[in-house]
Image 1 (cartoon, rainbow, N blue to C red):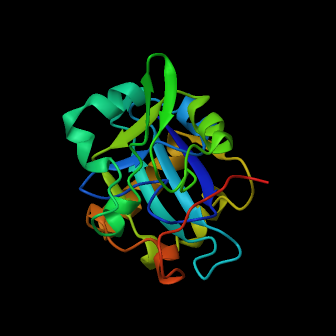
Image 2 (image 1 turned 45 degrees about the vertical axis):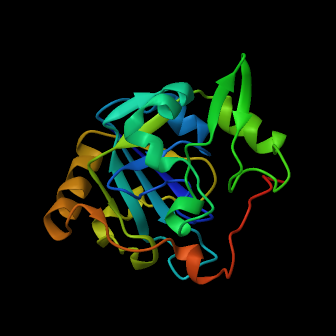
Length: 204
């Protein structure tokens, strides 16, 4: 069992997507999506430039791993497809990639342009054709939590990610499990910062 720890620079409820009792990592963080296996854990922490800096935004166990096409075609995850005629949970759906005649399709979404595909985001997201799926997770969002000092080494603070093994992460998982109920405990932090749906043009 491994724990992958990283900084969430933009918590819109898109990556991770914690809604509908399923937490998914289907975009961004290709290195983690490439290496994480079933039974591993992924944790995200607030960026240094926010009020939730160094606080735990989410913790998820990897229960399933699938390809983008499998994610798109699985009826369990149709609810994760983006819709603009609903609320923010639907607007930030992350089930946006699949193939048509061998070509990648990118749905109108947080990672696309309003008038078409954002090639930069498409290439970055799909270079690792894996989606991480969790039914056993905690998402705190704007109610991000502070871990006890003894777990401070696991808190990600820079780019990339940190990887911890077995005993290094088991105590953290046990601590969160004891103190908090499973599931969504808050709303995405960035929702309080925006008035309308936001798009991400890609890393510069």
